[in-house]
Amino acid sequence: MPSKTKTIDPQALANERTIINLQAMIDERIAKNKKRQRATSETPPLTIVSYDWESVAHDKTQTARMPASFLRSMLFMGMITNMPGHCLVIDRNGIGHWGCDPESFFILTEEEA
Image (cartoon, rainbow, N blue to C red; front, side):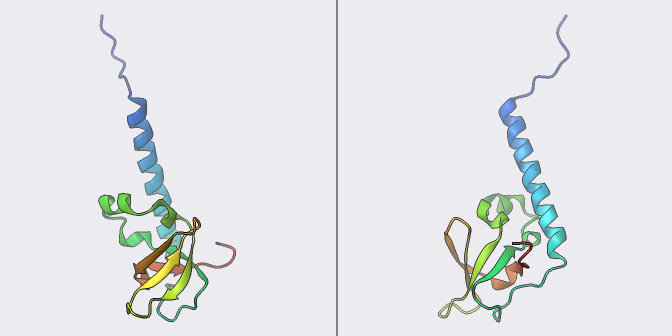
């Protein structure tokens, strides 16, 4: 008699758990960000910020393309002079991300960073 147990592919299960964990982290960030102040063009350089995941949470393909370093706090370096409305942030790996909208970030307190 054939077995009625379902065989689970371990790699597919690991991928599914990763997606679920990533979505849980994003949901947690969204809840915290509702209480935080947004970064603006007047935000001083060397401010610790966090990315606003609420802006991309609805689009899973865009979420998947975001660098994993955007899940952690980043250093806001200031506005780009010859690119109005855009800023430079540096992640914890030391990689600079430029051309970002400053309003896509929230200012963190020292305890949160």
